[in-house]
Image (cartoon, rainbow, N blue to C red):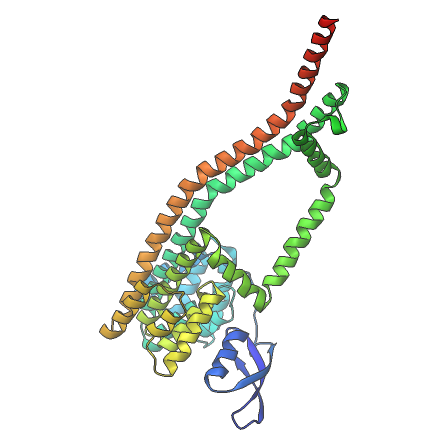
Length: 412
């Protein structure tokens, strides 16, 4: 976990300095604001303790299989070191194999499992660490790993459905771009040469044909300028979203963009409910669970709403009230959370909310795919049709001139 040095002004106006661990700078600032302090400066410093070499990020599907097998072996009474050694040899991912070997060495050396996993933040996020730590403290590590594997399997399934639904539209877009690129860069120049041989050029050409030829010349002769412009735009956008303000702007756009905004919102709600329910079921305190959820929900706007609700809960409010005031959580979600609070089954209600929104995402993806297919076909047909018509308009003009000339000759 990153370590930050901070300077803050206390309630008496004095300046205090220190260091603290936090998931991010935003979470650290929120933590001090809840205590009535105002941070004036925050700087990330190196984490305490020895660091290990980063092996990169491991795919969720491998982590899901690892958790399922790990929980089974722990439940069977196999020691942690032996489990890690066997699973490291069985996994197909070389990065996970090296990470498990390192964790096994550290556990054998006396470190706790959660502490050893914490040294690999790119692989094990705060949710993973929170559940493992709760399982260690409560002596129910196998149950925590089972819940974690179930959570990861659901997350993998949701991501797979989204990717599967987007595969066909992406393939059609690539095919359409290839066809249009071929026509613009190869066919149109050949057609331009034929038109010049026929004596048609410049202002003699119809407007659509002239536009198409100019576009072809721009792509052929100035492609490098277009490539540089595209690269600069992408680079500038990435730099912009790497800032706190830019990330918030991008996440707000994700929520408000037509059609896809609702889908992204449902995915965030499903992730919030599933993560929160899993943490509470594992015995993680609600304040700690909400801080973890804020870092994994996948949208900074919704994360801020969760952190605001966390601050209000510390003051004695119910969890549903601040979520409702954020206007990011539908009334059904707020109502079910309220019922869960009153009945003492909040974790169960959150799991039901997650099941509902995951099914909603699946239905939305199915309808979206069904709607995109005819739209893309019509769009592709319109583009190709415009190119074909633009190419044949000069021929119609030539034929018309020849017919007029023949009629004039016959009259004479």
